[in-house]
Amino acid sequence: MQKSTLDLQILTLPDNPGVYQYYDKDGKILYVGKAKNLKKRVSSYFNKIHDTAKTNVLVKKIVTIKHIVVPTETDALLLENNLIKTLQPRYNVLLRDDKTYPWICIKKEPFSRIFSTRNMVKDGSEYFGPYTSFKTVHTILDLIKELYPLRTCNYDLSQSNINSGKFKVCLEYHIGNCKGPCEGLEPLEEYQRQVNAIREILKGNFKESLKDFKKLMNNYAQNLQFEEAQKIKEKIEVLENYQSRSTIINPKITNIDVFSIISDESAAYVNFLQISHGSIIRSHTLEMKKKLDESDEELLELAIVELRERFQLLSKEIIVPFEMDLGENIKVTVPQLGDKKQILDLSIRNAKFYRIEQLKQLQIVDPDRHVNRIMAQMQKDLRLPSEPRHIECFDNSNIQGTNPVAACVVFKDGKPSKKDYRHFNVKTVEGPNDFASMTEIVYRRYKRLLDENEPLPQLIIIDGGKGQLSAALKSIDDLGLRGKVAIIGIAKRLEELFYPGDSIPLYLDKKSETLKVIQHLRNEAHRFGITFHRDKRSKSALNSSVESIPGIGEKTMLALIQHFKSVKRLKLATEKEISEVIGASKAKKIVDFYKTN
Image 1 (cartoon, rainbow, N blue to C red):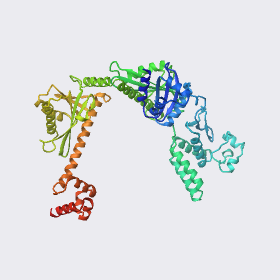
Image 2: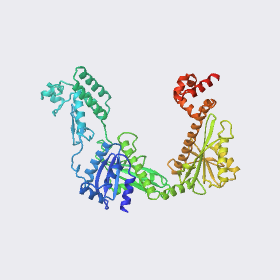
Image 3: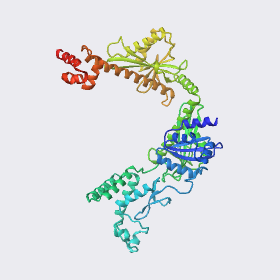
Image 4: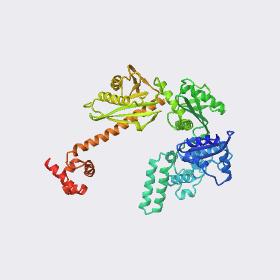
């Protein structure tokens, strides 16, 4: 049983970047890893014998796999680092120390210094990052140095110290890397203007700075300093690819819990992210079965109480997708944009992935149960006398009344049965009359099924509103099928469902699986009908211009149209030009035909 459960977990993993966590039979964490593609990476542990005994022992102990989906590979790298440091898994050797990824700091002081650091000090300074490679940090700092001459010393440049002449300029001033604020040679306003430009670069807004870089590069090139120009070019490329901020770590967001919810008819999935000192240190998704028609608000409130108790969460602020009242001691934030909204979106994404995986696992373990559940739900939602195991949907296609055709698509057990799809040419209707076309097609379809003793569907869906439904009902009545087969119409605009003899439409929940099946049917009928209509229209357009030429078949004419692009160009072509495509004898027939006509 253990192996099959693991296989299921692996089969339903997403192909997205993220972090995976392995747990043993006691629920103790064994290992945390990152992946560009979660499914491929995790599968690789289980489909081969590993070189090291340690990895083979680890694989034998794994019982549960959890994962967190993130937007990018860089985010996965940072999140892996956070989780290893927080959870200290036994089989992780690297990243268990107290070293963190580097940040770039703009120090809060007069004439701010800008430098890289691994330690964040809460003194009002600004921190950007973290960066997954020191190379990126050095490149950005080098670029800043190229453009903006800033001080590198750690003097206290207060106005009184500068006025008293306490400091003297150093070598950096003499070689042009600093403008000498320590001796008052550079005003504070001018220096801070440069710091503001650097802040924009670090935030990722570097349009203005890129202009300066390109100017610098062109100056080097004009002075024939091509090596220097190439260095600037490489730095510009790094900067253009530089990702300014990460969702996974954000120094502005301190201790906060994030909750989101995704639900369907039978269950709700609540995802929870714990943020500590700006870093995600825990993710958990809770599945809640619905007993009655509970709202998302009620379910999320229950889940928050349970999760805060289970994980002993003490944070004073929580982020949720909608307004809630959780008492006076907890601040509830519903973000609309910015960093907090990004983290809420990440939580919603993980809840969605979890739901998809659970449904996939259910389909693999017990496909009949999944189908039975949907069929029972459809019977209940649509107020049908029996489960709609066999559904047929009709759609008309015509453009300005030309080539009227219709399509009938068939779904069995909620899935397309393509071998049973049928096309119809409308025979008895002249001009664009959709209602009359629908009457004809429905009559022909079910007259044939009755004549051949074929099984009738439990549900017929008509793509259109009241008018189309009434037209189809005429045929149902003529064939004596009223009451034997359920029939409904679906109007495109608001997804309204119309029933015979009922002027008030039924509106289904936008999230309901019943509506999704009906929309799938309608879209299939539309696609199938349009494809047939296009084929017929293009054939008739070709036939109208070519069938009258004696001795010239459809394939020959098609080759000519493809070559000359239109019948008009073909008429203007010389016999020699035509003969190069289809040969001399056929070319003569075509030229003679157009001369005489």
